[in-house]
Length: 310
Image (cartoon, rainbow, N blue to C red; front, top):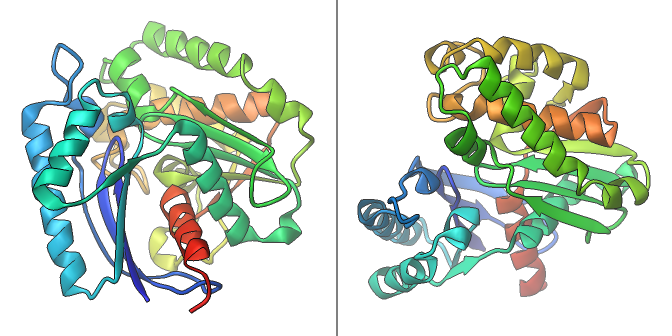
């Protein structure tokens, strides 16, 4: 069957069309996205701005037309921290439903962590043993560990790369004082939450997911995206320390000259690197294998599981 999923994140809104059936590898056939940056277009009252809501509704209308053009049989949409935390989130969901007929599912942070963990488990398989998954998004950081498809521990923290940049790293480049302060904030916040992950048992494989991790691995020398998803990629803690030191002194323009760094994400890369470094330090991880699947794929896989065999 042909399935479509619309992912409304803090940075981008992304339609992915896949050919899939239960038990099979979902095969991407078409992708359409926009850098909407929901979490950055906020009014002084903390609301998602009217102009941004209108752009979201218009883009979802485009997604519906594209899904129809591509013969999508099952289309679903979900949103993460940007709408989950917005005071006018419920109003936006109602407007989307009225204007497009799309029923947005707003995921909790724990569910984000669980579904990302599922995607990583399916990608690497049972032979990986106990997994530890670190997923850095725009609005939140998800951490999970476990032996099965359902993690033993799943945590979500407000330590997304976009959020930290917006709230705590205003400079371009940020001052040394700003960088030290956000580094301390990240580590203090993480230290209060990592005990359940540490006591669950040492991981057999530690994994990083999502755009920030892929960009950091690419800077460290990992294979470019056009070599395909099956090329092994990794991020080492030793390399990450050097990357953090380099990024501290670079402005946004200079960061875009680094391999694998997009213009849309360059501004938040230092914050993402600081989060990744803190997580690896506090969890005692020297290497992260990079998984091309994350939250979106986890939700697709769960959807297919519920559909059952054809």
